[in-house]
Amino acid sequence: MRGPGEGPPRPAAGARPAPRGPAELAGAKRAMRALRTIVDMSYAQHFLDFKGSAIPRAMQKLVVTRLSPNFREAVTLRRDCAVPLPGDGDLLVRNRFVGVNASDINHSAGRYGPSLKVPFDAGFEGIGEVVALGLSASARYTVGQAVAYMAPGSFAEYTVVSANVATPVPSVKPEYLALLVSGTTAYLSLEELGELSEGKKVLVTAAAGGTGQFAVQLSKRAKCHVIGTCSSDEKSAFLKSLGCDRPINYKTENVGAVLKREYPEGVDVVFESVGGALFDLAVNALATKGRLILIGFISGYQTPTGLSPVKAGTLPAKLLRKSASIQGFFLNHYLSKYQAAIDHLLKMYERGELVCEVDLGALSPGGKFTGLESVFRAVDHMYMGKNTGKIVVELPHAVNSKL
Image (tube, rainbow, N blue to C red; front, side):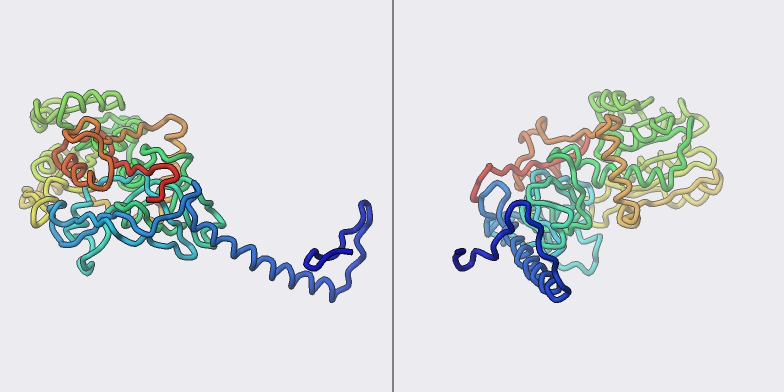
């Protein structure tokens, strides 16, 4: 005899189950549906850390508490914030590395959303492990999986990210972080606006920075002649290692004089992110039918207006005389093409076709950028022009930590 709750007897080995009628089959289907509900409830277990330790109730994060182009004045490190819970289609990511962008200051100054009211979360990109997820998100992701993402609120120990905007990555490496904003900005802007072809001359400003490094490499892959501006001999050497044909250290060489002397017919494409006087030099250096792609103007971001002066009064005449053009590029306007771009760049990196240089602050005065409190130093590092490659901050977590 079988005891209560043991279920129906199993058929003997080799025995064939008795045929079922329509009513019995319908009952079996109802039972399976009920069982599925029970199985789905097991996803509550995903709210446990994949290392076996509980997700903490509180965490640290950076919050914009007043609007200002001074990042240190605008942003506050809050140490006792509730860890958010993911919704049905969301992932909860424990951040291991977060990326620093020039636009973090525009965000903290309120320039991207005039209607955005303080307080709001800072940071745009991160990489880490999934530690919890909603039921719908579990169709594509699992606890412990490494993911990278571009989404608001990355300057935090934990961030809720929509599964639709997360990108699975082979491991939690900071190099993957360099592709999310910087890599895709360079790739999509040049792909959509650059019209690159063999033999074209391409000028990249801030060429050794997080985005410039990709503009140099992608232009070289298109068989272009690449000129890159930078601020040190060490950065010049780095650019040469990427294939840059003519690095220009603007601390020791006059950029305008070099361009006039060595490129008297001008350059075909400018990838510009600095603004101010360098923007004026780049416009002057455009060839007939040249194109200037404007991805930013970092030289002015820390000013109240967010701008640095340019000789705009003569700009129409200069463009008309050369049949030249200037076009802005803002990544958010190309999100429909973002996933294909990041997938392409990830494959290039995995094949060894792309260098993703990251700057973790090892050579900075305060040492490696570790912990959310070091984001402030990392932003300063960027605006002093000290970085080579993408600036990345590490957020260490002890294994099995209860935090």
